[in-house]
Image (cartoon, rainbow, N blue to C red; front, side, top):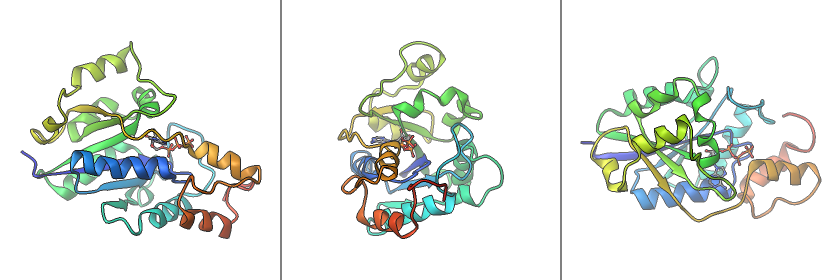
Length: 217
Ligand code: ATP
């Protein structure tokens, strides 16, 4: 039985915002996680190329979590060649942390809709539990192979996450925050303010490096 639970929250974070940060912190408290690792991808295989470089996106994650001991930025996908596959990161973390730490891969329900396109998606549960976050405006699939997979692996109690090291799915409704990186980029590229949607330190970095004002950084 694992002693500890750690969250792994992968994303593009282009840029990171309070929807990510507040969800991560609320999960720490709700599931009594040791921490949540925010893990920016380097070369996301399932979506258009990010606007900012991986280094810039990781810098913004680092700035955002700097003062919160339960959140950290995990840059392992920046150090790896090739596409950023979550399965590789989970295997890597499992080796690093050992069997006494169970991993909880965190994802919003919008991301779950595309999960069957992920590399070796059905093996994700061999290495981690999956925690799905409800997100305003998005619903989980109700039919098809992903819906069947969710139903097959869903745990009825979040306490079950501590009973075994991997393999369960829980769905958590946290404080709904209708914030997205797309909307923040849209506001910034139109010359409008994105203040209060993301940390001031991240906004200062965006200003300093003139990000999202038109070109790719
Ligand atoms: P974009 O608008 O560029 O697609 P995003 O805001 O969805 O970006 P991502 O970096 O793509 O952010 O998301 C990383 C993870 O965070 C995904 O699993 C996504 O579902 C989740 N997420 C993003 N925003 C929120 C939010 N406001 N509440 C809960 N989960 C979120």
